[in-house]
Length: 290
Length: 290
DNA sequence: CATGCTCTTGAATCCCTAG
DNA sequence: CCTAGGGATTCAAGAGCAT
Image 1: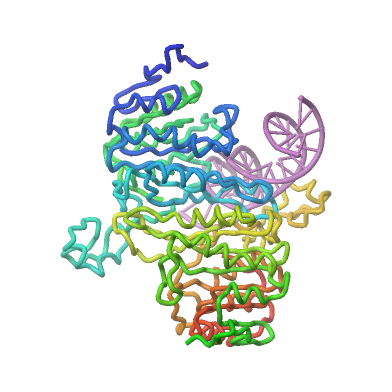
Image 2 (image 1 turned 135 degrees about the vertical axis):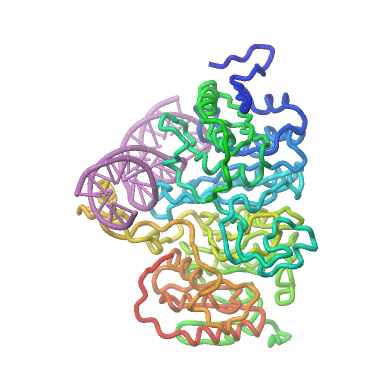
């Protein structure tokens, strides 16, 4: 079902409207056609090694680090200088031992020039108790956060909770011009606290993910929205090179950002387009958080 | 304050009673004197690279992996075949980029024969909003779980929650002799569910940590107790090579296990002894969980 | 609007067999 | 001997109702 021609990938979008563009094709090739510094952030859940092989070909663990470095390489030009890349992944167990390909991947990305900004968490309270019965139920995944340097754009309050005990240590923040800090020049005791580096969202029952969504990698759009609020400036552009069912796109539109989605499979490019196209226009979405 | 002689470390315990032994000295040297297969698990929070340098000398990041592999090497003999090692650590930020020494440490341990069983989490809901103000509040740490192979002893229900909906799909488990599974041969609908791979304990307000505890690495004894219940059989022996204020020891005694603590600093060996010695005798402690 | 019950489902993991 | 694929097994957390 691939519409590519012999001359190379078809860079005509599979879908386009004024907020979203969906491409069908190899993500590295599509990214190479995007304009310089046109993307604020990447939020994605790439295929795991040896998983989803029917859809994506199943990258062997030994090749995974280089495969990742390769699709990310053209991003260095396309990403804005303070842009972020957030990658959701967690190693699986093999005879009671976790695989090491994510460690090698992180090290290779670092040595190929990416700055590893932090490791954020996705907690899954309803993670199914499958797998090894003699081990704890595995109920979290990593969100690996990379940038071009240590100064990526970030809104540390985007996912914060309201608090009434802020600004009590005030003073120095004002002098340093940190407008992130509440209580500057005033003795505020109430306001938005900083986000935690942990996002908690259930796997299922995401109101924005329709019942007709069928994809081997369920990725709640609320999680994508959390990431987007954190690292994408309002009105910016979000890219997902493994768009899948389009949950990142749904989240981007809901959060008032633009979306560029890519998927190798026509089926999923179409599903992304269908879901993104159905999103109602953005009116006013504040930062309601985890 | 070091009482070592020129002939080598003093292997006379700094403190001993029928449940606990505290040594003052270099942990690798002390471990080398312990009997074969005498320890069920190690639960520890080692000094981070370049941190706590006033007490422990501050291991440079570049030497940290090898330093870790070295103190763990003699454990291979001392640990029981199904024993576990749980190491609490999280990389710090350096100009907005996380350090990579924990990645290198994990890979070196793996290549030197250790099995990495999983990565568990300690969530710190009350983590203070320190560090970079333009980033999310860092509120978790890793518990790196290693063993001699993938078959370490583990009680997956030790930290579980009670549930009244277990055993509903039961059947084959009984035939396979899996006593981990609830609902065998009966139609139970109530019992202990499996633990999550996430432990949530606040930093402050640990009832078992006396107010006089002063140590540069606050490590709640409730967290240590969670780990001990998970990987140490009842009545077994827990080792902490960086005993510090002795929180692991307090937890071990409370959970009805034996404790072997080691610390390089006389001050902390003494503090561990004081706290462990004050623990009331064990009567009956069930697995009350996170 | 709490509470309780039913119902569904999941980036799992292991083992065994076939190539 | 290693790889690939299929089958069997597992249960907690919502959501959606009914009361």
